[in-house]
Each structure stands twice: as structure tokens, then as C-alpha cells.
Image (cartoon, rainbow, N blue to C red):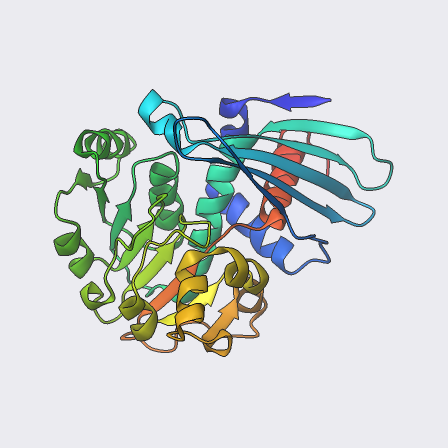
Amino acid sequence: MLVLDEEQTRAALPWPELIEAIARMFQSECVMPVRHHHEMEVPGEESATLLLMPAWLPGHYAGVKTVSVFPGNMRRGLPAIFGTYLLSSGATGEMLAAIDGGELTARRTAAASALASRYLARADAEELLVCGTGRLSLNLMLAHGTTRPIKKYRVWGRNRHAAETIAAEARALGLDAEAVADIEAAARTADIISCATLSGEPLISGEWLKPGAHLDLVGAFKPDMRESDDEAIRRASVYVDTRAGAVSEAGDIVQPLISGVLRESDIRAELAELVSGAHGGRSHDAEITLFKSVGAALEDLAGAILAYETVTGRQ
């Protein structure tokens, strides 16, 4: 059985290939049951979350990801997310690979956002603001820069030192990146705003979004979490990775649905419809677009298959 650690997983998932693999999987016959979502008590701090995400391509591959999210890890200097992906044969059940779940999750999540921005962000988008300083931040910069001609990268976080660290890591990779203290000022000029936080309250006000802006919401994966306010929902054309996941799990969608600010029929399309061409995505340069991602098991399966086939040379 192949075992890939974090570094090996990263090397096996180059951005262009990963983005295309996810696009293909959204057009496939992949079976994706509703993921298991369990809250786990952690004495003396915020509750943790255990996610189990299965998916399979009949007769080809099957896989399941186990992920734990411990918000309190930020105070311990540890990643909030740990996980492992188990890939097996869809024909025999033979276990094929164990893949670092944290790296797989970070890269496929960023790749899905970049795939969405291919259809929803302006073709000439040059300025990206990333909100959040966790594992996803640098991945989002690199992924969005693969599908759009980003020239300026900005990072905002509640911890200014952490934001400076992420910006320095980005500069070391050749990106023109800087940490910013004023989230409103940075949001008002950004072509793409990508949020990857565990925020319980809105970070981005819709009033800040300039004509043509694209708002990419990656964090806030539970109904009581939120990264955008009602005005952002009102002003934007709303898209999601999967309708089933967004309307049941994503606070940025669930809360506006409950209050009546948003109706399910207002959701323009899900990612599969954008990829297939069933919906054309952005309709004009001044349109404000919003993409809410909650994560889909087929994205993990796409990444796991790509990593396995890249390393083994099997197709």
C-alpha cells in the first residue's frame, strides 16, 4: 500500500493538474453520500468536529476521508485540521493508498475555489485579498494565481504576526504579497476576496464590494458560522459548490435562507453546472459574484486518485 506524507502529497498534486482533475470529477458518475458530521466535546474549550467523507467511482476507485477540526489548536501552535484519506480499488476493495488528509484537504479546497473563480471572477482579476492565516491561506494564493492573472496578494488576519508570516512565505515563492491591518480598505480594492476562517461573525461587508468583485467563502463550515453579511448576499450573484451541502451546512447560506434574505431559487448554480456549461457563470464585468464552498467528497477522491496515479504511474 502506498503511503504519502504531507510533503509527498503536496508534490503529487500540482495546481493545474489538480484543478482539472476536480473539474473532471464534477462531470463524472461519482457517488457521494452525505458526509457524517459529528461534534466532539473538548473540556475547557471550543468543541471539535469529526468529519467522515466517502465517495466512489463505481468499478474504479473508492475512498473515505476522516478529518478532525480542533479550533483550540490555534492556541497550541498546531494546525486546526488533521486528517487521512484512504483510497481503495472500486473493483476489488483492495487498499491502495493512505494519503495525508490535511494537505489533500488544503489543496483540493483551494483548487475548487480556483476552479470556481475561472467562471465567476473577472478574467482580468489582478488583486487578491486572503482573509485568514491558517493552512489554506498560502494555498488559496497559489491556486487563484493559477486561474487568474493575480499580481498583488494581500493577507489579513486577526493575528498580525501570523499574517506577516504568511505574506513572507508567499514572497519567498515569488509572489508580490503583503500583510494588511485594515480589512475594509483592502476589501474595497480587491478583485477577489477569499476567506478561510472559523469566524462566527461576518468579516466582509457587502457594502465594501466593488463592482466586478468576486467573494470566495471557504471557511465557516457550520450553520452558526459566517464570513459575509446579508448585504453581500443581497448584492451578489450566489453560487455554491454543492446545493445539498451549502443549504444544510454553510452559515453564509443557511442564515440568509432562514431570515428570508436569500431563497434557494436565488442560488444561480452549483459547481457541476458551471463546469458542464449548464450555467455560464459571470454575465458581465460589473457583476458581483459570491461562491460558497463547504467541501465535497468527490474533490478529495479526485485529488487522491491524482496523487496515487502520479506517484505510481498507473492510469
